[in-house]
Structure formats: structure tokens, C-alpha cells
Length: 82
Image (cartoon, rainbow, N blue to C red):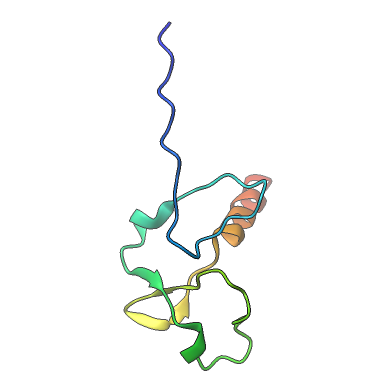
């Protein structure tokens, strides 16, 4: 029986992050307008600017952020148990 090919490791841009213990997923191709936002210029007072990881935004409306990869994992996991 032929063995299955080993998938290529998923890499992220500098500043990308996935917490230890979570599988790396990369749905980026499904979000063509996703880019790294400028935390220093965003007016929302609750944005956690001190976090060294990238903050991803919709380039069409850069004040709108995406959930982090960790939040996406948590959301996916909670829906799977419903």
C-alpha cells in the first residue's frame, strides 16, 4: 500500500502566530483582502497593541479586524461539539 505524501509545513509571515498545541491552519486563500493592519493607528481603545503578533484586517476597510487563528480554532472546536 503506497504511503500518503507528507503535507508541506504551513508557514506564516513574520509576526504570525499559533499557540502551542493547536494545529496550524491557513485559510488565507479564502480571504483575498486580508492583510496586516497598523495597530498604532487604530482608534479603538481596547485593541491590544502590546501583543507582538500580527493584527489582520480587511484591506477594503482597515478598521475591521479578523479573528486570530487561535480564536478561529476555538470557534471551530466549540461548533464541533454542538
